Length: 423
Image 1 (cartoon, helix red, strand yellow):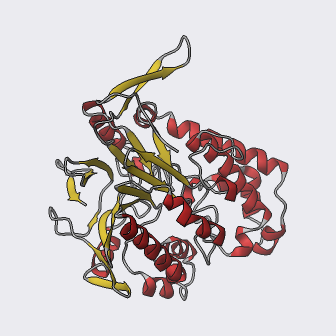
Image 2 (cartoon, rainbow, N blue to C red; image 1 turned 90 degrees about the horizontal axis):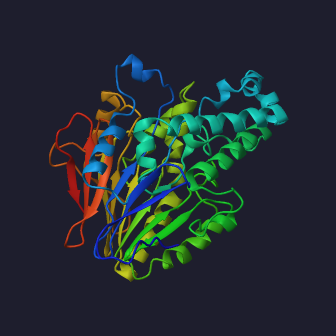
């Protein structure tokens, strides 16, 4: 559960490596301070050719993060989801490509064959090796300890938000299990059925994780394993949540990693409209993925109230960090006796969406929305731009100042200075 370094007051360099081989070094925070944290999400895209088409260096933000790390080392790197984009599993695996050409009814009943299993296992293993051996990311993965939580693209696009008969069919389940084994190996560093102590959700079959670093906590709930069109988390996980949050008793600040933002524009009307439009399945999946989907509204309010109760009862500041939307953003929920801040940063690799999309979100995010009795939500403009969304690739730097406040710096592509917020 805990992360501890040498019993020194100041930062310490720690080396590791194989005997007779090269060593790598990381910086461990001293007992006198709090960790410096970097946050990333959306490390890829559905179509890798976009970078050459746009003459856009794929890993430019990773290079920028690496330069900042060399100047003033980060102690911890949080990965908020979509660490890789595995959507090509359906095209790159011949047996799965053949399955995809079948009529929908035949797809649902088709078995997950030995050939499919072997091809899927090899696909995910090779994809991780290719992705993480790229120089810019590899330099950071070897020198900053990571906490990683998956989202849909680590499996394949929209996992968990597909219709139940498709989500539970043998081929979908087989591909999911291959993705799960690779996630456990590469992103957590364990066998899928032998998780380390930091994986609190192991008994429930999920990857929910928790850590304490001094009086700061990090909580990363698994919002994919149990997801269906009708829910985000199972009742078993809901029953476990209060006890998991009790483990942060005595902390002053909790960073909650929610792969999709908890504080975001209300897209209920857009989502309902999409249901009536033909050939919009991909967009429907993306909207259904959101905490703020009208389908998840009761569960969303349930989580807000639980976090608010914990924050108020324990005098605990809770800050949510998220990615997924390929934009930077900042928002806040004001409730009875608590403030819940949201810092959204994505993508470190994925290109920003269209100008029109960002403008629609700006318009939908104006003003203050009442989401429950005595509880309001607001997307907060950045003072530097006057806008609520950052339409450029970005990563997030987090550090605590001497007053114990969390300082957030969005490191934005094309900007000389970061956009800042103190929460």
